[in-house]
Amino acid sequence: MKQTFSLEHPKKKPARMGEAVRARIKKYVKRERRKPLPDDVDFWDFDCKFGYTEAEAQVVHLSSMSKHIMEAEAKGCMSFYVEILVKKGHRTKKARPAELPHDNA
Image (cartoon, rainbow, N blue to C red):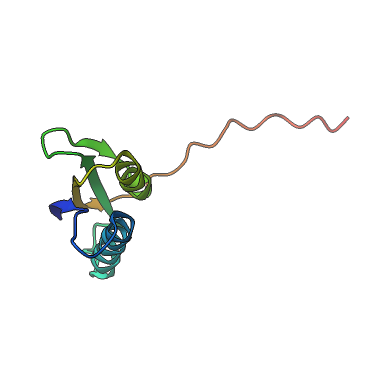
C-alpha cells in the first residue's frame, strides 16, 4: 500500500477522516497477515514509511503509524503519505544471559 491520504472532505471533519484512514490501514494489515505463509517464512512483517509528502516519508514502525496520523491531524495537515509493504519475517532466538554459578553452601 502506497498512498497519499487526504483529510479534506466537504461533509466530514478531519478527525473522522483520520479514523477512516486508521481503520483502512488496520484492515489492510489484517488482510495481508491472513495470507498463507511460504514454508521458509515464520510471519509476515511490514516495512512502513510515513510523511506529509512522498519525498519526506521516513521509516516508522507499524505500531506507531496511528500516532503519526493523529499528530498530522493535530498539526492541521490536510494530507499525508503512508507506505506499508509486506516482507517475509524470520524469528531469531534471543541471546540468553550467561548463567551465574549457584553457591549451594
